[in-house]
Image 1 (spheres, rainbow, N blue to C red):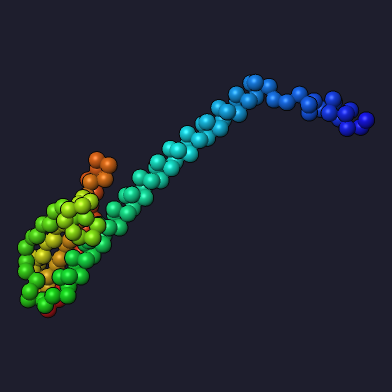
Image 2 (cartoon, rainbow, N blue to C red):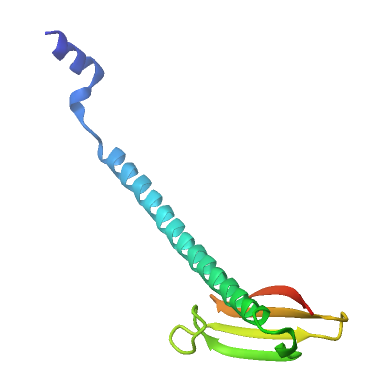
Length: 136
């Protein structure tokens, strides 16, 4: 007796109205659309971070290659490498260009090296530049 009285008084047996169900569906749809937009944005940020890391690695690899050479074998000037992938190879997913500039005139007994790696991310030009100096 007590349970039936509570159900009738609090209207637990009536269920949901069509309006309540429709509002719940709208709320869930908006939440799913927002989640989808967030996931798309996160994917773009991850791709950009991966590309920036690859570009930094390409620049660092070139600097290490030059620093491991004898000082006299590092020639002044500019070198451009185009169409590189994340591993420094040409072809495949080749989106990176690397420009290496060696200056031996600014500081006596030193050579400055600037390596710039550039690429295009979603229609925007991006670049990473690393600088170092090598002494005699």
